[in-house]
Image (cartoon, rainbow, N blue to C red; front, side, top):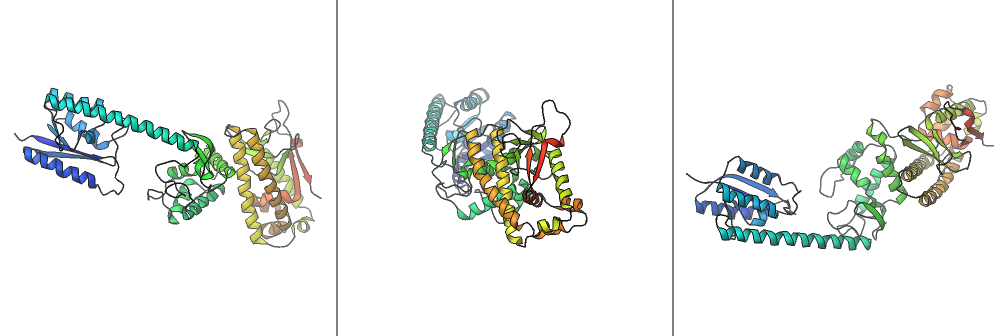
Length: 454
């Protein structure tokens, strides 16, 4: 009866995807089978798959083992033993199969034949030597990676999106796409929508594939785009390569993507009073943070104010609507027209506010210390103040000018987006939030002070 044979083919890395090495192995293995008069009943190919790690999935290899256990073949041909396995434990399984069940295993290069004592001895020696070399190579790679990390150099391996192959320079076209994705996320876009937009803009991953939400998330939270060096999951310092975004923006992006509220449908939470309101006790800036209890306002010190955001937002909105309903509202808001500048300032203000929220989130979970929080918030708060001042001079344009002449002020206020509402608040008043008081259960309007500007 003709012996039924299987052929196993593998190469560790196929950079071109043309399977040229696999084809060479196939030709040699088929020649061996023909010379023996065997019938080839199965061909198993793992292209661009390593055999050095026992945890690395090799789908074709797993099918090969299952088919042998099912009795589908009695002979196995591979080009070399290290194509079949680099794991001594796996090799012993094949040796047992040769001794106990009569499996004939040959290599096309003629170096191993498990049907003989010498062949099995040679196979064991070769597998041990190969395994030792794998371990030495792994140790060398770990040490080289540690040295690169200590020197602040980029990671070796697959090219990072936004950078040159050596990781030392910015790829301008990809960096522009990355910043676009960041801006869209800060503006409230979903990962799925941003991934689709990147594909529509012609952007692809460094593997040449369209963007998917999971891969986009990994890209956006990677600290390397903020110039930070990561080793074994921890930021260990500043890298030697140029940053595409600043650290504050990176923290804001990471905080948004870590927000549990993003698991729900709809846009991520944005806060009406971030960087507008101050703590009534210490005067520090108030931030919006989403926790398990829901959206909260904290003061920068996180020691005085920790208040539910929704009743405060509702109160401030009601006070603003009442103020705008007075006869002098039209005069208060009418200061000229510069729509383009207002839109630009509102966009920048939104980015600054999200960065401030991100700093607060990062401090809340321990990613940054108090000194980093203060330094970052001082810089951003100064810019926010400049923006709010200029917006105050221009606030009469566009939607805000229309607000002043609205017949139904409550409806007009509700129709404004959050940026428009914040612009009006910044123009008209200062908001101070005080602690709720020990044991307080009901919301007390007296703990929120609205002071009108002159």
